Amino acid sequence: MSEPRVMVVTGTRKGIGRYLAEHYVAQGFRVVGCSRATPDWTLAGYEHFAADVSDEPAVKEMFRQVRRRHGRVDVLLNNAGIASMNHVMLTPLSTVRDVFATNVLGTFLFCREAARLMSADGRGGRIVNFAPVATPLRLEGEAVYAASKAAVESLTRVLARELAPFGITVNAVGPTPVETDLIRSVPKEKMDALIARQAIPRLGEMRDISNVIDFFIREESRFVTGQVLYLGGV
Amino acid sequence: MPASVEEIRRSVAHAIDEYNAAEGTAVPAADDTVLLGGGAAVDSLGLVRLVLTVERRLEDDFGTAVSLTDEKAMSQRHSPFRSVGALVAYAALCLADRP
Image 1 (cartoon, rainbow over the protein chains, first blue to last red):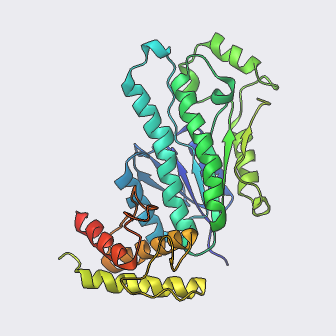
Image 2: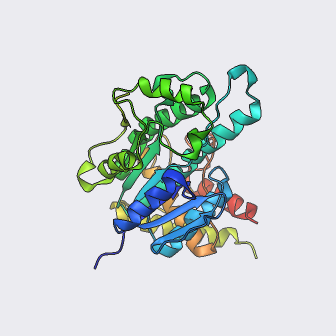
């Protein structure tokens, strides 16, 4: 029997991250997750690291442990993200720093460390970043979040080129709003207006996201890289 | 006890052996082997692969994770990766900085 493939997922304590951990454990992956706090759930085939995704020493130590325990990473899902809903003139710089630390620095650090491990034995791998529709929709009130995710899109497209010689594909899934903690603070009329701009005007579901990831990480998608796939017809 | 420069030089030499075996190359493990720019023994992607191989070898040999990253990585004049000797010196610096 072949060894299980190893997937690293960030932001697994709850919401989409937890769903993805469960979804891919069910597909036979060994899933390694992380979040700042320890989750209140456990799952056979899942192991957790308490780490802030923007904390370089903690991230490096996590990958060091992954290398020692499993010797490989096949897939990375950069799901961890934080949002901020505010008018630009009322947004403190500390919010900008926090959002960019998690969304941009965290994504960069995990891409870098995972790519190092993926390239080690010539096996290559798959990286999927998260670049939600806030960026192409240019949402008012989400300037900082949208800007941080625009950075993730750029990172995705350039890393696709830099990592292609190592057999690593880098793509991004672009979710619409999904019923999670991240959108609970957004006023209903704001959310309705946002959804109305989609070709298919409804909230996204977790399985809409995993469907795109399933496509990006399948063996047959080895020629698909540098793409951002938005859901809902955005 | 911190690793000596000689131990680090041996570790880097082993990494170069591993790199040569994997890539089918014959990069000499001598201090004056040029790794960047004119007359370099590896191309730019080869340099990336070699540095990553050295990182892994250092971690295995000294039991501590080292990141051989640097702002000037691709600068021919100032890069810590411009030659094998510079790489050994830089690795020693990075290992000395470890807690």
